[in-house]
Image (cartoon, rainbow, N blue to C red):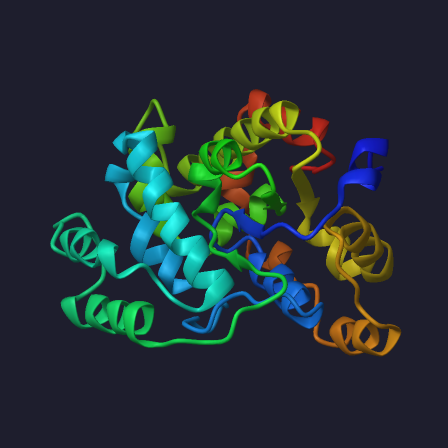
Length: 282
């Protein structure tokens, strides 16, 4: 249930969506877009904002000085709100592209930089973005932008552990996980628990601006979930648009893909953790 503060403060600030890769963040980006929120024009098929990816998806961002992070975020926000990226940041962006830590080829950086600096679109009334890795910086971005609202998407941990999307585990696993041993399934389950713990801490610190939502709720109780999000975020989806949106949602049958041998070896701690959050690991 939303708090009285959320009821009163839902406004017109930016909206960010993040979560573990393979966790269903795309359907929430689609929801925002259908509500008239501009989520960027340089998007991939899952609707990730590739300008955000260019600027912030890198392990070195963890050591970024808060002032430098603020400068990059201000440039990103200006691009999203006005359609123009500050030319004074071009050299900084070029230096980011030269780092060896990225998983993308030079051609990818060239195209992202081109759209970032050379495309100019009209100013928008409401903007936001979806990029799963946003959760890594959510707390710091909420500190920087007091109008920002962050939507953290959580999905059944066994769906995540069984997913073929391993990008975040490769990039952030060494940061979040104390133990690099164990099966891939176990490490992804551990990663889910660590990310969830961090997201809950951010929500506790910013209860009026960090909203944790369940993927399963949106695909099975779409109207109630959409109504809740609309109220909290200050957006609106017409009944016709809601009906069309509902028609795009199909709950996946991941249960048939769960590795039962791996499931049988889950720790009691993981089972308790997930159970406390409404997920049955069995």
